[in-house]
Length: 260
Image (cartoon, rainbow, N blue to C red; front, side):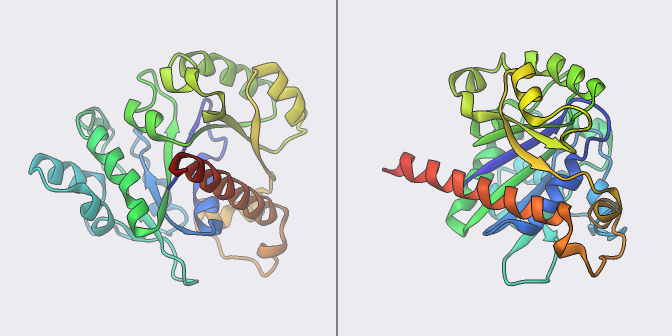
């Protein structure tokens, strides 16, 4: 079982697009969680093209937590299909309806994270879109249980400088101090102008994933634009498939070591 936690340091580096893309390519059943405190509803309004959540999402999870109900079943019940294109279960848990809701959710994260980790019994991995890093940082329980916290950035100087500032705060977390393999970079559009090697060396954090910068193709994932006939052969789709396979394999090996 793996929890992949995605976040960013600067504006619009593609966290939600990456989360959706990886969820659609993930080799096992997967739950994508919208945990963006900004309550942008980017997946519902974007990839799902304005689909209504019919009241489902984190608000209902909080209500179940208040009522002391088991959250593992609630999480699945509150999720909506991300796609029905193949046999794998690809679900989406909608996020906050209002920005103020995130501040009231602090007491829920611990039990919710345990519920997400427990989805292993149902064969699910979990990808969490935590949005852009805020002054309050990431929910501590998520960081503690995530197999990998990935900071998404582009290869321009502004993104690198912003990442350096926020990495200082991320590195203060005991979990990320204890395991260097728990923190990595997801680079969108390497070589524009700096390479993955240059960025990893500069920031002192390894680049775990390299995603092609392909805006026309990405609009299918970010905005629900029509899927082109060449989507599967695009540089973006190939890079997403490669990353999803590599990360899922890595997480499975880590789980086997823990079980062994």
